[in-house]
Structures are given as C-alpha cells and as structure tokens.
Length: 200
Image (cartoon, rainbow, N blue to C red; front, side, top):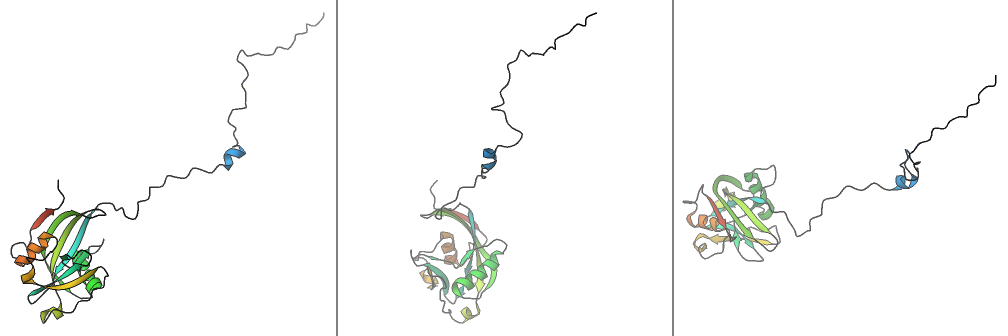
C-alpha cells in the first residue's frame, strides 16, 4: 500500500512582519552611549549688588565720658550713630558688641545692661533694610577720667565725642537712639519702638 506523503504545512500569520529597524536594542548604540548625561540644573547666580532681604540684628553701645558720648560718623553722608555692629551667628549680642568696639575703635569695653531695643526699616540705593537694634551700656576704664582718643580702624567711618548738649541739633540715626540719648534712657529703657521710614 502506497504511503501518503503529506506536505509540511507552514503556519502563516495574518499580521504583517514587523521591521526591526526602529526597535530598541538591548545593547546601547555607540551613538547613545557616547552622549554625555544632562547636567543637573544649577541655581541662578545672584549678582554682586543684589542681596536677599533679611532682618539684621545689631548690637550698639552707649559709652559716656563726663558730658560726652562716643558716636560713629558716616564719613560719606555725615550722620552719626552709636558704635556697634552686626551680631554673627553663634555669638551673643554682648559678645558681638565687645568685638565690634575692639575691631572698629581699638577699645576694650565691658558690656553692661541692655538699655534699649528699637526696630526700624529704611531704604538705601542697593536694598531695603530691616534692623533690630539692641543698645547696651558699656564702660571703658579710660573714659572714667577723660574721653580717650579713638582712632578708627575702618576707612569709611570716624569717631566723635559729642557733647550731650549738642544732641538735639545733630543728625543721629536711628531716631529711637537719638531720643534715648536725649533722656539718657530715663524714659526709653526697655521700650521696643518700631520706626519705619518706608511709606506704606
């Protein structure tokens, strides 16, 4: 009996064949591997003249010698203010004040009690300022006998021993400090006064 020969059947699909030209390969292509990775976005740099607004804490001192008080003079604009400077992170206001007296006036002072707290805002050409001033009584051994000679250690400021009688007609800033000196703190001690030069 003759054997039936059956032709091998191929399974045919109704879907069209897929091209592998655009399919991703398991291995990265040489071109893709050579591409540098995108760098993380960097924060925009702030210009030298642009400063982020913040509240400044400043320690200042009242040093009296007889009938005179020691004041700093802004050499560019001429107004006067109590000696002192910014409180740095990690130091107390009293430590900051003693440091500033030594750095700016070459005077070693003893910082006494807190006499006045004032708060104010004002604007300059570069930015707006918001200051909290902590004013202390300070003592210096030489000031008990006579006002010592004070030589400024900074190029942009000088020091004046101002007679207390001349305070009313003198430009002393901020106004709260001037009011305090006029009464020697009799009425202003312990008062927090907010003075703003910025118009709402």
